Length: 182
Image 1 (cartoon, helix red, strand yellow):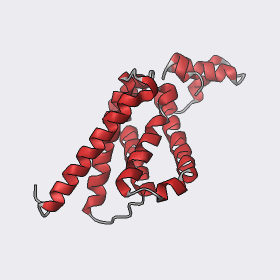
Image 2 (spheres, rainbow, N blue to C red; image 1 turned 60 degrees about the horizontal axis):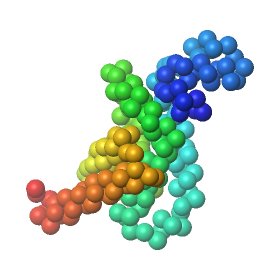
Image 3 (tube, helix red, strand yellow; image 1 turned 180 degrees about the horizontal axis):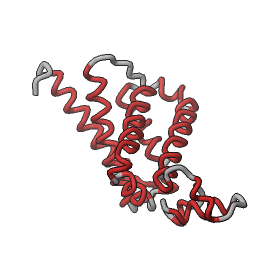
Image 4 (cartoon, one colour; image 1 turned 90 degrees about the vertical axis):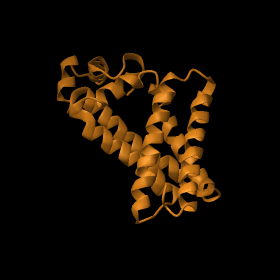
């Protein structure tokens, strides 16, 4: 991954990675899926790192309510893209290709599921799907917003995320007040 920040999500990064490990630059061809495989591996690895970071924050999470936990965990997951954020539009373009949509949606679903799971959601009803779909939409919009954010420490992305999460909480509470009919 060290070459992605410099070269982007492309074959050049794979070739540089192969060279740095002492392999000929053509060794990138053994990487399953090429560039999409690189992105897939990055997202899978990020998921593992996310779980480790969540475990480190376990005590802090216990002190928060559900909405605060979801906010903290979503921000934590978005922060993992910071080293690559200015090259991330390239990855998003690769993930939007028809042959990669299944992989992309799987990872997005995993991100939303992990956030809700580690926030403490164990619902086993239709809300399970609604919560995850809503969070996936919020996460992906914040992810895209972050690629254009030039504010220090991505403060505008955090504000954007907070507004989207507050809107989702407001809609959820309005729906409950109306008896589930909107």
